[in-house]
Each structure stands twice: as C-alpha cells, then as structure tokens.
Amino acid sequence: MTKITLMDGGLGQELVRRSNDPPTNLWSTQVMVDHPGLVAAVHRDYRDAGARVHVTNTYALHRDRLEGIGLADQFEALFDMALRETRSVCVGHGQIAGSIGPLGASYRPDIHPEHDVSVPLYAEVAELLGPHVDLIICETIASIAHAQAVLEGALSAGVPVWLSMTVMDEDGSRLRSGEPLAEVLPLAADGAAALLANCAAPEAMRAAVDVLGRGPVPFGAYANGFTQISQEFLEDKPTVASLAARHDLGPAVYAGLACGWIEQGATIVGGCCEVGPEHIATLADAIRAAGHEVV
Image 1 (tube, rainbow, N blue to C red):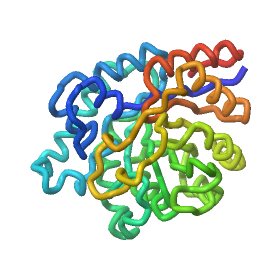
Image 2 (image 1 turned 180 degrees about the vertical axis):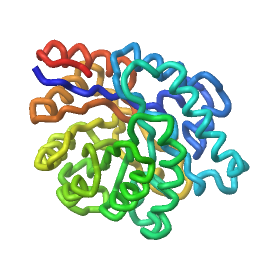
Image 3 (image 1 turned 90 degrees about the vertical axis):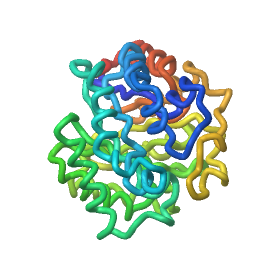
Image 4 (image 1 turned 135 degrees about the vertical axis):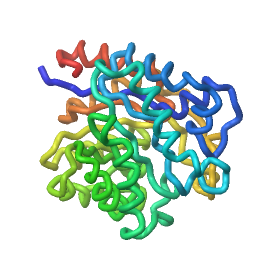
C-alpha cells in the first residue's frame, strides 16, 4: 500500500461554467467577485469527492493582471476573499495549498519578467498566502527562469513550496519553453518540497512523471482536459472562450491515466482545467481499489 496525496481538480473552469457568465480575462477572479460563495461551493464538492489538497483561487491574483481594469486597489482584499472561501469549507479536511500562477500570462515564458523584477512580486503574493495555508503551490511554470524566480519568491513565506511545471502536449519531457524538464530537478536542492507537472494533456504526463521521478522529492501530475492550447489564448489578455474541452476524457478514462502515473511512482495526483469533482471522486475510488491509501 502506498499513501497517495489526492489534490482537487480544476477550479477556474469549474467556476466559469457554474457562473454562466461570459468569460473575462480575469477568469476565476471575476467570478469570485460577482458570485460570492461559489468558490466555497466548488471547494466543498472537491472535498466531498475525496480531495485532500485544496488549492486556493489565487492563481490569477497578480498586480499586473489587475492593473487597468479597476481592481488594482483591491489586491489584498481579493486574497482575503479567496482564502476565506477556501478555509470556510476545507479547514480540517486535508491541506490548503496557496496557488501562485505565472506573472504576465499562462504558457508565455517569452513575456515572463526578469529575475530581479519577478522575485519580489512572487514574494509579495507568497507572504499574503503563507500565514493562511499549509503549503504554497507554484503552478503552470513554463521555463527554468520562471521556476527559479517563483521558488525564490515563494520560499519567503516560510511554508513548504511545491513546483508544478507545464510541459509540451506533444513531448512531456520538455517545458513549454522548449527546455528539458530535467533541468528543474536541481531545484529540489534549492528548497522545492515536491515537483509536479500540470496543465498539459494527460497523455504527456507519462513522460513528465518519468523525468520527475529521477529527483529526490515527492512527485506527481495533474493534467488538463483541453483539446489544445489555442493560438488565440497565447495573445495578450486572453479569455478561456478560446479554449475547448475534450469529450473523450470522462472520469473513468482520466482515473485510468492517473493510476498509470501512480504505477510509475507518483505519490501526488489530481486534476487541472476541465477536470471536475466527478473525475476526482472516480480517481479516489480507483486509488483505493488499487490498494493504496488516499491522504
């Protein structure tokens, strides 16, 4: 029997779907502002599905994303809002993971700020999260420079830091920047408590998990359910309206793929965009059916 840490699934896409509002470039942040209580409802569904790591709705909370849209003065208040909604239903039901997404935009290593600019920005976010979470998870890391900067900034919060990299859908052994995923392994010595792959096609995760398994810390994966990351989404201030969900990735299929990562040695699994509570419930059952313990 192996102890498997089960994360929740995608938060942003689930919120956008449940709100029935047109997507904006503020993604789940706008939904949280317009629909108080909806974030807590999604967290509750993942909790009841069996998730034991609950990721906060703070992925897109960066000053650069709030500038020019009338919310820059609500930076700290939005963190308070997200943390209250998570803690209201998840305290006592596993770990709360404070999410830090990329500066600039997802999947865009070409526009990630220089190290001396990005580290203090990541540190500011980490220090807002740190007193209220059990760990920080730095998500959708697309380059080595991004990984180095966000790790340095996040460690200032004084809680464990997980690094999660987004890999190429066609080659899970390479970051979205084109750099080898293996180049993140030395970051474990710099303080990363776990190494993960996220927000890429589940079929790419086998190669990613193989690479991450060569490192000295716990590892795993949580994939998305998009057909592809469209060119429109890679433009400035994109919205999720330009992304489409797959129709061949039901809960049983996804659970089968994730159990394959566990067979490779992964001890942390969950879901990213378009992977919902039913997927996580089915995955929890599959993990137990394979003789493992969900923790």
